[in-house]
Image (cartoon, rainbow, N blue to C red; front, side, top):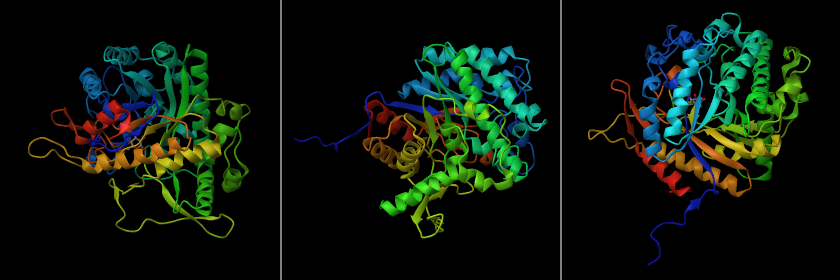
Amino acid sequence: MPSLRPHPLKFPNKFTWGFATAAAQIEGAAFEDGKGWSVWDDFARQPGRVAGGDTLDVACDHYHRFDDDFRLMRSLGVINYRLSLAWPRILPDGGRVVNQPGIDFYHRLFDSMERHVITPWVTMFHWDTPLALEKKGGWRHRGTVDAFARYADVIVKAYGDRVKHWFTLNEIPCFTSLGYSGALDKAPGILASPQVVNQTLHHAVVAHGHAVRAVRTFGGRGAQVGMADVPNGYIPVTESEEDIMAARRAFTSANDRILGVVTQGRYSAAYLRACGADRPIVQRGDLALIASPTDYLGLNVYYGDFVRAVPGDAGFEVLPFPAGYPKTCRTGWLKTTPQALYWTPRFATEIYGAKTIYITENGYGANEAPSANGELHDLHRRDYLRQYLHELHRAIRDGIQVKGYFAWSFMDNFEWADGYSVRFGLVHTDYKTQKRTPKLSARWYSRVVAENALV
Ligand code: FCB
């Protein structure tokens, strides 16, 4: 009898499968062992900022439970883990004074990962700027770049012998252009002028350059580094040449500000034209540092906008999503658009020359509770992930060099302005008891990883 199973969609040999999280979202212990305040510790205490008035104080209490968490991760067969380090745990006020208990904590964490044979992929910065730096201007201020450069040196010196995969900064637009353009839901939640907003973006890419420099200088043998970017994604509404060209144009016009400058070492004429009088001030040496060669590009991909070709200078039109389009999260930002995981890596490759790509985040947020028997049938998340991975498989088949995929997120955690009301975990977190329960999606993902194929 022929196999009952459909022909499997196999991923390439040695494909890296992992989970992703970030320090601020899972660790808790927000003021323990000398950790300083981050902008998010402060933001969460401002009335009306975070759903339900939730704070990061306890989160998943991973600070005290990491060993059990790694045992669970390992039991699911996931042996690659993207985590971030909390800058204010290492340098509580962002200055020069190193907090040794903070350094020791991550050594204990890496020890535990080693015991469970899990490889760390470390993000240096995932939005938790030390509050003391924000009080001096934060990312508006060049001093934050210098402070970040010192931080990068400290962590790469401390952990360079055990961490060989680094990511520099996570999703630059979220803590710069959103954080300083009056968006209500991203710390520090300040409204600055357009020039200052462009300057924060510039400062962040300079910081990225310093992070690469730190890894090259102190990372030791075999150390690799790249950014974890979140490009705006654009999907041609039909896969005709005209619509594909239109989507490419949309991709360039939105993403030159980061991907353009880090890969080409200059701001594109189109970007500078769009900035007009509000262009960033660039210091001598910045552009070469920003464009320091990297080993890979990390892409966080959640959704894309649909684009079609239209006559006119821009040559593209972004189509509005109709009411009732499948979407999730409190503000509805996450639209189910699987083709984003085909086109975003493809455009990053074709337009910006990315040679090696890791999908550093992809996931689905909802608010689900266990059923009466304690099981969690998160079929919507499972389906979302499966559809997106199908498109990723198609991109790889078409020659795009995607080497790995990290599902966001290992467990439910503090989802920024949505607090604990939106759950992205493949593992359920009961915030009262801190009990972890793998959802159906975790069981399914575990099989995908084991078979290296879509199942
Ligand atoms: C991304 C963030 C990550 C998580 C997901 C849902 O933008 O990088 O921390 O909150 O969204």
